[in-house]
Image 1 (cartoon, rainbow, N blue to C red):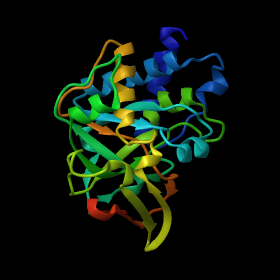
Image 2: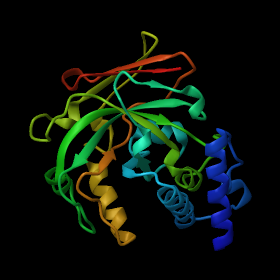
Image 3: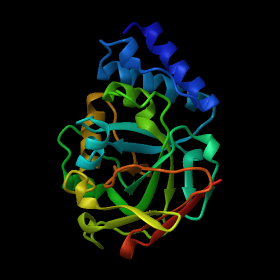
Image 4: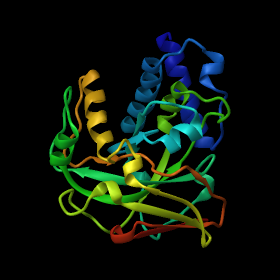
Length: 260
């Protein structure tokens, strides 16, 4: 795609974020758009946010489980960026009207204690670089019409990331078998989704290694202190204004939040 088109779409998405609206699918208007184009769109949007003063604190990985791939019809992972003003603690009240197409996913997040770099990063390398895991809920926030989306659309839209709510329990990778961390997700007291972290690529930290290798293709690496949101092991759950959301992660505690 021409550079001026890429920048124009990034501006469209920024305006959709500001107005909490949705734009027509990029792939419907530009059927030849590639994954490289979509990351270029995301990159311009990211850089303009950084220039405006927002602080980048980590990355989200999406579409890492069969549950999510089947829910979206998309068959490979993607990634986006997370800013400091999108991170909340358990018990938070989130403004429903700050988001579009509001859905919740059940995930683990990892905080790195050392840089992580491809091209041959393994799961073992990722585990060695992780300081701790913490349970997380991701709030999806799509600014592109949902029907018929492809991975090009989702990547351009910062992988549909809106916010995350972090739990209080932190575990080092050697303290717990991360594959078997469960998630029981409820809305207003009724269980809606359940899953186990092994559903994310066989091990939730596999995506961290995948991301390090993907970054190497762009001449970059993951840095110490970054938060990596590793991907959902449940289907997305729709939420509405006034809903209370809870997720029980067994020995990794519980997360609660409310949409006001």
